[in-house]
Amino acid sequence: MKTYLPLIIGMTLVTYIPRLFPLFFLTQKDISPKLKQFLLYIPYASLSILIARGIMTAGPDMKLATVVGVGAAGIVSYINGSLVLSVLAGVLGSYLMINIFP
Image (tube, rainbow, N blue to C red):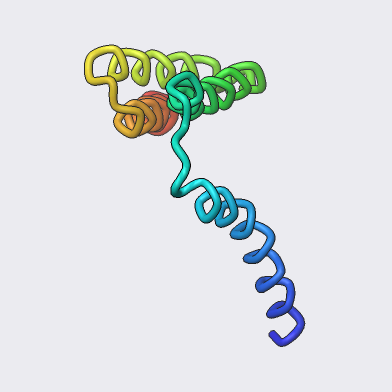
């Protein structure tokens, strides 16, 4: 147990410091509207990359579940526009296809 504590502390610092510095140094600065608009698209771009990678690396027996999950996420995203609900709908659609309709 004692050997893992320095590792956990080190990993905590390595992941926390890059998040702390921009928050600490950029709190009082104004961001240009173009940069702000660019930063608003990062979550959607990241999700798109993860989805595209998941589709391309899906096994042959998971293709239908992948398509259903992406379709459910796309429909919910189009209707509602919520990123969290889109992800949940995609996961639920894939889960249902894998476990209920084998």
